[in-house]
Image (cartoon, rainbow, N blue to C red; front, side, top):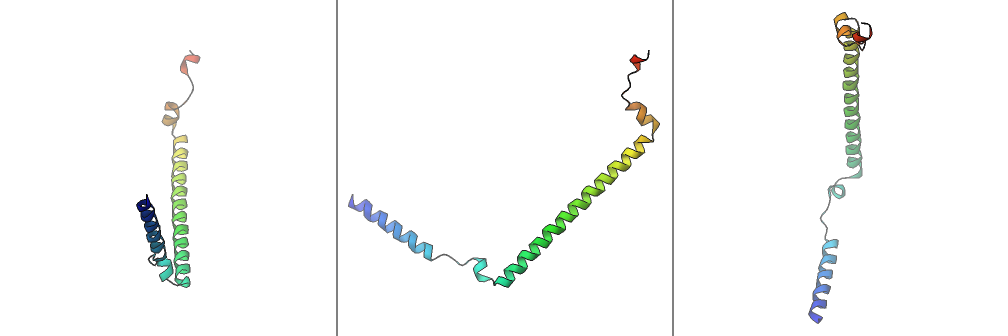
Length: 90
C-alpha cells in the first residue's frame, strides 16, 4: 500500500514539474504589435471574403430575375407552366 502512495506522489510531482516547463507559444514569442497586426489582417481577410460571397449572391439573384423576366415574356413557356386545367373548360 505504501508503494501505491509513493507512485501517486511521484506522478503528481512530475505533472507539476511539466506544468512549469511548458514550451513557449507563438503568442509568447511575438510582440503585442505583431499580434495586433495579424489579427487586423485576419479581420480584413474575413471582410473581403464576406464581400465576395455577397457579390456572388447578388449576381446569382440578378441572373435568376433576368431568367424569370425572360420566361414571363415567352408565350410557349407560359403555356407549358400554366396552372389552368383544360378539363375545367370542356
